[in-house]
Image (tube, rainbow, N blue to C red; front, side, top):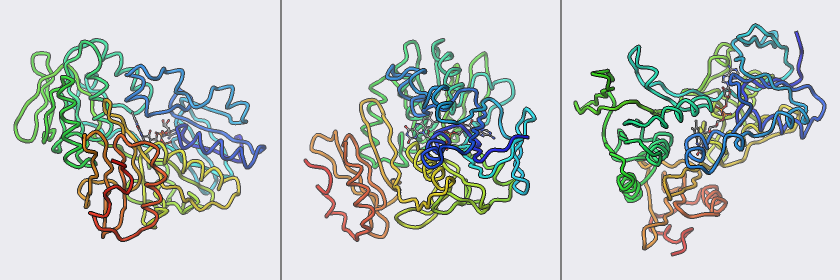
Amino acid sequence: MKRYTYLIVGAGAAAASAASAIRKQDPQGSLLMLGAESDPPYQRPPLSKGLWLGKDKEEEITLKRPADWETLGVTLALGDPVINLDPERCVVGTKAGKTFFYEKLLLATGGQPRPLPTPPGLENRVFSLRSLADYRRLHTRATEGGTVLVIGGGFLGAELAVALSLQPGLAVHYCVSGKGPLAHVLPPPLMEQVSARYREAGVQLHVEHHFKDLRSESGQLISRFADGAEISCDWITYGIGMLSLTALAEAAGLVMAPGGVRVDDGMRSSDPRIWVSGDLATYPDPVWGTPLRLEHWDNAEATGRAAGSSMAGKEVHFQHQSMFYSDIYEFGFEAVGECRSDMDCYTDISPGGDKAVVYYLRDDQIHGILLWNVWDQVKTARSLIAQKAVVHLQELRGRIGDW
Ligand SMILES: Cc1cc2nc3c(=O)[nH]c(=O)nc-3n(C[C@H](O)[C@H](O)[C@H](O)COP(=O)(O)OP(=O)(O)OC[C@H]3O[C@@H](n4cnc5c(N)ncnc54)[C@H](O)[C@@H]3O)c2cc1C
């Protein structure tokens, strides 16, 4: 059984970033990265955006070429998930029956799509999207045309509805349970702009539609919603949330947090030889100190980097305020902190309505800022949140937006 100084379980954003950070501190220690997918680490955001819109190509989204991982001294073992973790013996075991000893272990397994309840026999017409392999399946189906139903008002559903509406030969129904797409984040004026844009693109947008069940009738898929409405289509794709892959951490007896694994500000778990990063890690919010778990690319890279540095012996106190972003047609936004439309919101919108800054407040303090078609202001947004100043809604006008 081979022994590694550093063993990384998972081969996504957090894992890749941790491996690079380890190498900055320790060029020598042996490093193995074990991944369930056959593809080497790649960027996930283009799977629902750039690859569909022709902005990215598959070969451009890999994080490093296999030869570059080798040069970095990272051994990649792909296509074989880890299924056992014995923290007493410091051993992991894979599905193919391989076992490895570790001195220091990183769990960076991310998550998997929350499944849409699907009757047996219909699975091959219902598509989720998490991996490059999922994207390839979905893309092949999309090129065959027909009527597709997209379910989910979050980022993934919203981006999929955009991507599919721009493919030739597809009729798109888009169902969301809220009052519009991204209703959990966007205040009404922005959500209405977005809703109008979907309709302009020919999407049949159905709001306040709570998915209930699915059946097949005369070759069509029939989705039924809580209010009794039904939509008929040829195939379905959906994004209704993510479930973190916590099984290894739970089996190892690590202290858990809702939806993730509890770590300190150096990404170290309750086992001093195990670190956790990315979508899986719940760490102290650098501004507020409360437990925080995020499902965003920047967070995965930053927490991966922190975990890698800490594993290689550097003292780390994670201070990064992660940002997230999305693109919906020609609207683009970047955001920092907690951005929920059910918080106290102030929307500073430009006279033409094309740009906006949304401030999200709790107890009169800014907890989140969303920059709508406003660029290069993430740093300012971070600093406004970090000040923790008590503000009044009307004082926020013009703080960032200059119109
Ligand atoms: C389609 C899509 C679009 C997105 N777009 C955006 C965006 O625009 N902006 C944004 O901020 N965020 C976006 N995200 C979220 C972002 O990609 C994730 O937050 C980020 O990838 C999380 O990184 P991670 O390393 O924690 O997990 P992942 O990237 O999921 O990587 C985890 C890896 O571990 C592997 N693994 C799991 N279990 C095991 C095991 N037992 N053994 C070995 N390997 C295992 C998985 O197969 C996977 O390869 C998007 C996500 C998706 C799916």
